[in-house]
Image 1 (cartoon, one colour):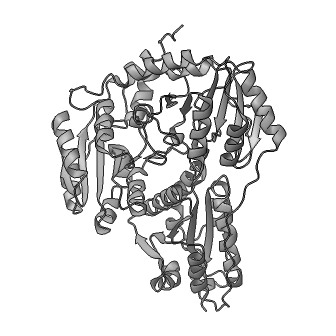
Image 2 (cartoon, one colour):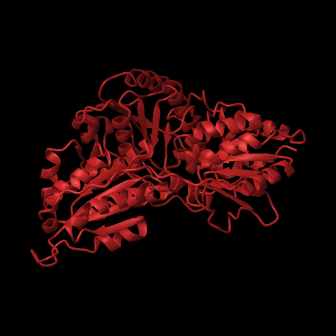
Amino acid sequence: MKASDLFVKALENEGVEYIFGIPGEENLDMLNSLKDSSIKLILTRHEQGAGFMAATYGRLTGKVGVCMATLGPGATNLVTPAAYANLGGMPIMMITGQKPIKKSKQGRFQIIDVVHMMKPITKYSKTVVNANNIASMVRESFKIALHERPGAVHIELPEDIAREEVSEQLFPVHSPRYPIARNEGLQNALDMLYEAKMPLILIGAGANRTRIGSAMQDFIDKLGIPFFVTQMGKGVVDEFHPLYLGTAALSDDDYLHCAIERADLIINVGHDIIEKPPFFMHEGGTKVIHVNFLPSAVDATYFPQLDVIGDIACNLKSLTRFATKQEHWDFSYYMRVRDESQGHIVKYFKDERFPILPQRALKDIRDVLPKDGILTLDNGIYKIWFARNYKCFMPNTLLLDNALATMGAGLASAMAAKIVHPDKKVIAVCGDGGFMMNSQELETAVRLELDLVVIILNDNAYGMIKWKQEGMEFENFGLDYNNPDFVQYAKAYGAMGYRPTSCDDFGVILKKVIDSKGVHLIDLEVDYSLNHTILNELLKNKTCLV
């Protein structure tokens, strides 16, 4: 068979359902092989959209998302999604084309060293130089992409190699089995836990895996230890749980940090230093137990006293089985902090001012989305408000990026979520800046007949940087712009567009579109005037409860 046929069969052997991408001339053999396969091609309008969709597919399914692009400019457009997936722990394979490698076709036209470009931001990047190696390279790269910590892999398929004749050879697929901690490691953790007077649990991104959520909840319920989460650990345990203290949307100075600073031990499940720090460790300060698939990476902000390494779910189950609740533990202060923090969080939930406050907008969205509904965020100042104030019932129902924290991924992420879960309600919340970076994917969403709600928080500026600029006491400069008419923009793609004129109007529109067919875009004016007042002044000057 032709080498490109073998490549597609190897992907089918891995259970690949979709390939997201934009084929180029150098992918035409691959495209022709896909035509008669079981894999569905999702044609996008930009390679970034394809990469973000593949990464979100991997994040939601635990399987490898696959995307495809041509050589040169097509491949360079996958750099941001590669970094997004690799830092975010999302398994993704990128397939790029290349000119013939055995003879020159067009000199150096469009040729760059894509493999070496990808190496620093992937776990694996290689060129196929012998078609007989395709099946083994695909199997190896899928294993690497899925192995903890999941991430990005890349294979370059030159067009002359894609046309070679090869014999069919596929390799059996099997899931990895992770080791578990030794009994002495578990006992060391229990000793530290029993010595503590005010232990606290942190749930990070690495705990957002199948099986871990139920093991985590059993551990919390048996021992009664309060917990908080990182931005990418949201939903692992139901955040309406009475022991939930909040989300560390900021690295310090929030009300939640009053509890963190009082803790004498933090059991850190699934967090690593790639995600923005939920707190800072200090010499002689709070002790930390690192529970993760891999050892902790020592950093000035993070240097745990104990690592419990291996399958997180299995290790949690072992700790739950052996651990006992201690009478000397005192969580009363944590509960007081929880109540005070919650009072501040709900303060603006019913605020009627318009343009709308982000705090009010997220409350209206939470009221409309069912427990299993999925909300995806692009990146902007609103991400802090949503991470901090929006509660999740279930894992992977708030998809945000707190690793690379790129703009432009929110819409594509929502589209992938709807493809993976067509029966669930899906809303994308994007700032006007992030939305315009990949807004052309509205056409893809309409063409795929997705039922999707897109909310643009419109402030005609790069609001996150304006907030930082104000916090550094610089003058407002260089961050304001003009937007198109988003309602007409949506209609031009065949979507429906809306522009609320009040908070009540937004609520009415949102309730209507969440149950409607098709793609619906809401151009929502947002008021960020409290960002500096609350996040830079009120929180930094707060006094912790005694």
